[in-house]
Image (cartoon, rainbow, N blue to C red):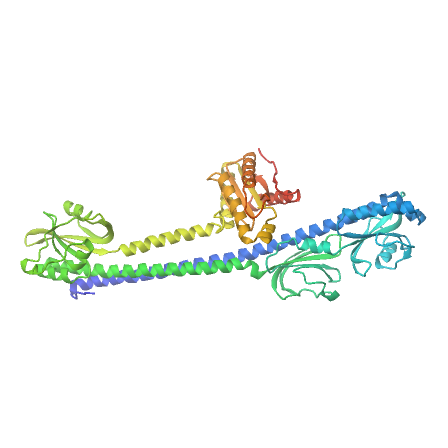
Length: 633
């Protein structure tokens, strides 16, 4: 770098150094602020992931408790209906039946066994605990001495029931006992049903708790009845109580806590519930490795993006500092040219920037240094040219510099895109200084090529655009992600409250999606998700917002749309998806969900809760169904 040391240039140099320090401080502040934003966003993502895991554990434990309780209550009703049988009443009164009556009673009991697939045995006992009938054996009546016989004589309430677990060979499973009443509503005996423990295991295996999740079903003695993954029965020994490291929520028969598993020592978020009316407890655990996986991936991506942004920022800073240094040189060179033509020639030949001396009346190039000749693709200076006055005498064809010279405009450090003689273009910082040289009107043009810097700036803008898009877009389906959908819903609710315009919300998820992943692999599952996303986008308007808010769960916001119109759109989506052919299965892909609309005073959680309840009802009603609460003005 060429530096001219004199009084005038020292002032300029101090000014340029001050600008360089300011640029460095601004770059440091920018990088620090972006890093802080990344850290805060990652912290929020971590907290959001844990909150979603807690909600998932609570929802799954509630769902499992409802399913198991429903099955046990259904079995109790089947057993209780035995009181309505005349043959059972006759057996309790006479203790004997004819062979034909015995066969008919056996047919009735086996019919009840078929009503509940996991109900494997029914016994009828009289008030003295004699077994009058058993679906598993025949022979003379025998007397049992069991805890439910003691319960029978101690508990006088006719509507009470008894539930316990047994490991004896004859009654290995869940024992349900109901009292039998005669026509005068007097307790005359009891019916005992043995439910296979596989009923619990079958329901447990249906719940998705992630790759490292855990589900336990325990009785009142801490005996393991069912689990996922399947741990067996712990050699018939009761499990120890879990020691929670942090209690997150507690009320009534529900407890949510963080603890290490008593079986595999994995740290999980657990949700524990007591089954209403039955002596069993369901425990659902979501492993930290499962809900932090997406956070770790996002943290890695965010760090790489920040490092890339930091690299580009440093490159731009370096280019800017170089520009400052070049501007310093350019101004010093211009001052020397004004003093003397000889000094101007020396500056033209030695300056590392492109310098051109132009006669403004004829618009012809008088002199140009090597960088200028390379930049403007001018012919090389021939041998002996120095002795002939060192004049190039070439026409200047450089737009818009020629226009500035024609109008007499003075330009200082202006960034502009130049067009050369061959129509090619480049970006440069241009300064034009008009000066007399030997009584000839001339102008000194200084050019500094910033094409590379401009390319880096454009690349940085494109990367920032991609980062903003990634922050609101689901990477697989290209729909909006959960965070953007929540923000959009909040904004639409504010608009509805302000202008009282209608809005509808649909929440749905793919039926039996886990079966696609288990049977055909995750690639097939991804294809199903893409097909649903494409169908939703094709059938909705540009103003509608389609989002993927969970694994196989989607949300569609219909601004300014009444409920009946949203129902028609969701029906079209179902039709399009029904006509989609997948190479890995002949079955149709369906989904179930709920549609609701805005009501005054609605919050995001309230309207989503209504849609989720309708989704659950659609699932319970058989799937492939969109339910609506039909609340329109």
